Length: 200
Image (cartoon, rainbow, N blue to C red):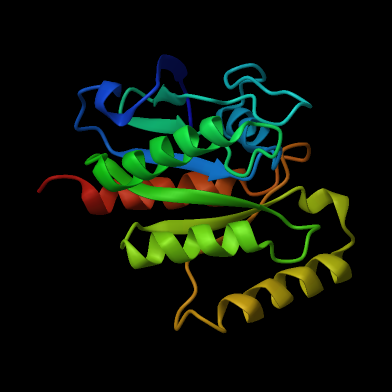
């Protein structure tokens, strides 16, 4: 359960992130996948993370302190088509440096729009995470936008695509920011990881 959530800092590079040993969980996905809305839903705080109808709103590494005991991180979205080549490369470098160099990072949550067929950019990013041994989970967003049958079909198709290259699937969560779906499951999973990573 998330009781308190407070903004800490926005950083342009991993080297400027908080000097902290608290466990850290980062959320990432294609631009406009509903990342900031999901963070606000999890924290029950409507305006904690800035949301926008315009893709590419998040351009920095945003840290939030949760329950005074762990950090939630809002990472820039990848694949922002309207950004120039230079900015896209800068964001790519920022994200990769964070994923590879941020020692407190326990797990990444990769957000996927459940309404879409598997997108190459998402598959390639998850492949990169796997190759670099970055722990991650998949979070399907906007599940309230589909009927139960169609949603089940889309998720099954996505799993099948992943199993073409993966021997084992990462943890998978179904969420809806508007309906509050998946909040309990995600926070319980984070709490379990916190217990596992706590010093003896």
